[in-house]
Amino acid sequence: MNLRIFNTLTKNVEEFIPNDSKEVKMYTCGPTVYHFAHIGNLRAYIFEDILEKTLKYLGYNVKRCMNITDVGHLTSDSDSGEDKMLKGAKREHKSVMDIANFYTERFHEDLTTLNIKWPEIVVKATDNIPFYIKMIEKLLKEGYAYQSGGNIYFDTSKLDDYYKLTNHKIDEMVVGVREGVEEDRAKKNQADFVLWFTKSKFDDQELKWTSPWGLGYPGWHIECSGISIKYLGEYLDIHCGGVDNIFPHHTNEIAQSEAYLGHKWCNYWIHGEHLNDSTGKMSKSKGEFLTIDLLKEKGYNPLSYRFMCLNASYRKVLVFSYDALDNAENAYIKLKNKIDSIENNGDFQEEIFNRYNEKFKEYIGDDLNIANAITLIYDIIKSNISGVTKIKLIESFDTVLSLDLLKKETKSIMDEDILKQIEKRNQAKKEKNYKEADNIRDELLKKGIQLIDGRDGTTYKFVNKM
Ligand code: AMP
Ligand code: ZN
Image (cartoon, rainbow, N blue to C red):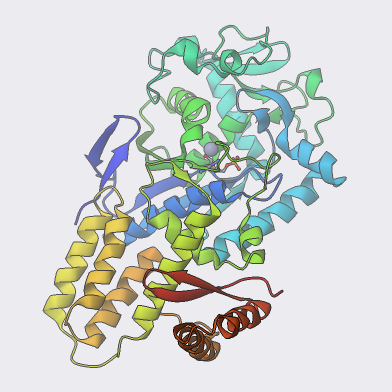
């Protein structure tokens, strides 16, 4: 079964053909570990997780690498402002290293909580400095880079197709213009970007390394090119990130990698759309800082958030609201309850298993149509095939979805209790004994169980105990 996927490079849904049929090389941009990840960031990692697991389900071996950005990512993606890591260190009165270690750990925990697999190769930007220096030396030697005002810049005018990943005209895309950022006069061309910083403006930078151009530190973009080439080789199949990475980050990665290698580098550029909040762009500093821990504190099951993301196309903007999350949580709980009530009996029906499995592969292979793949589970539950076959199918699909569909909740004993209370409350309502009905609801809420009345009856969710 094949994968058809939208390639930002060609702006088409294409058949995925890896360079080497035995192993897919996949690179995904990792976090800048200066703060907690917000759930928008985590949407990007959920999408990448699904892509990796889809590839595996379709029979590919996948070698995946991700970086941890712990230096060089400035507050503006176009090389201006402060280093985000330094900003984090100042905010918390800690060293950059402490900040990096702390938030890398938290990030790892978030991924675990959301059943996102940790990539097999995870590399810190600061562990690969000599490799970036080697790349920059070659770029300088071959005339793709220049030294000016202390920094080393990539000369974008040396490429005819610098903007090939984006749809936009040059003027719109130059971040310096777009964001009204002060122009860097050391640059030859507006779009040129920094490969290595030594400028005195960044003197308070905590982490610096010696280089042929003086004490300094690498730019953000060269980190991903360097790590990808070092750990996955010169020919990459897939490179992912959120849509904000298309320009300038991935555009610059292509420029410097292909100039360095002297050939095309990566065939498929796959980007996940953003999660926005009601105000638009999600932020770590303004408004409510939406983290997975916050959702947990509010009583949500983190996998309800995963479920919510999986029901939307990775190519469409998703707007976060607590109503939307409530709906996702209810649907998720209902689905789990339905699965829970399947009796694991009857004979295994291999032919039927294969038929549904092929359908599942068809959906996930259709530009990651996970919503359809989930609908298939409802069809299976409703069908009259044997319980054993149903369970085996769901078990198999969950290796991609990772929604713990067969995991019994530890709260299951309690569940029976809650269901009894709901029945009692329904009875009270029937008898127009609203006081008793409200009492039952309030008592449950005190225990951290919130009842939700819907069209199909009453469900519940776990919230903070009152
Ligand atoms: P950062 O830690 O800022 O480097 O971002 C980590 C990842 O999250 C990158 O792949 C970004 O493209 C992605 N990202 C940032 N904001 C959002 C958002 N609101 N929704 C989805 N992905 C995002
Ligand atoms: Zn990157």
